[in-house]
Length: 342
Image (cartoon, rainbow, N blue to C red; front, side, top):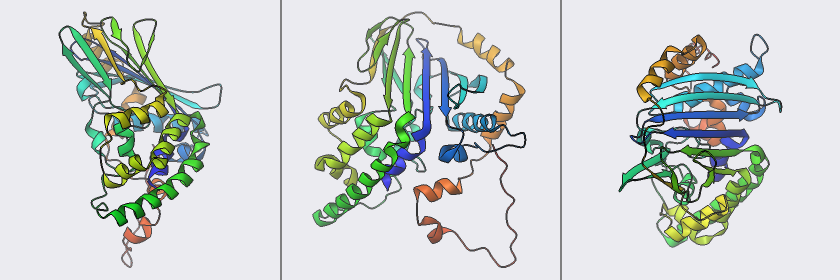
């Protein structure tokens, strides 16, 4: 159930990402994530009863470790904090420093299909270009092209080529996808992605973003809008065919998907004037490294370890795969020790 899998993992998470960018592309990122401590996401991210009974703290450590592990291009992390919010959710904040925004990759809720390697894994979260005294920031995490690619894993090596096989696969994807989207629509009720960018110079054109006081541009979407876009892709024959055959949406089709998901068909890009740096990157970076708490250093060590695939997550995203691929233990072989919780 490819579409359901693409939506399932981020369903209980709210995430706000703020980027403060210098004209040379260096900057800092603040990530605030919130999630329910119990349920599916709680179990997958470490939300269980710890020895001290602090479920929220354990969940927070799991969320922070996941954020750090999945990020690319961050030179140093600091200001790690976790708390239990008034609504009962676990809230985690991290600040990171990056030398080049075009090499920065952070989680933004739906920019990566859970459980599968995709071509988006190596794309920066925001691409910045400079020309003629103008800097353009393009949010690469959400878009018609990206969303269409989410429904099919890059693991798929063979795609249907005959018309009969294509139609059969379309019918299968539509039936499974409709059930999946209906199932997760309720789970995605609290899912929210918010991206805020603060460029060094005055914003000239916010594009599909919303301009806010303080020279900020924000974009926000949620579970309902993403499910609406997924349903559009299931019910539109042309879009579903592209998913099945691995095709690329046309500019008009990208706008169609974006309109359903974001309420606008404008490109998610910002144009701003080039100005002076907003802060001294090297000085703040040095302070950030010096201020790392022992708890954060422990999280960094944990995040640097090879990631162990969650058996529960793998079974969820790949039903039936376990029985077909898991090797039988040799007679007398010892069982591996259980992994330590995050």
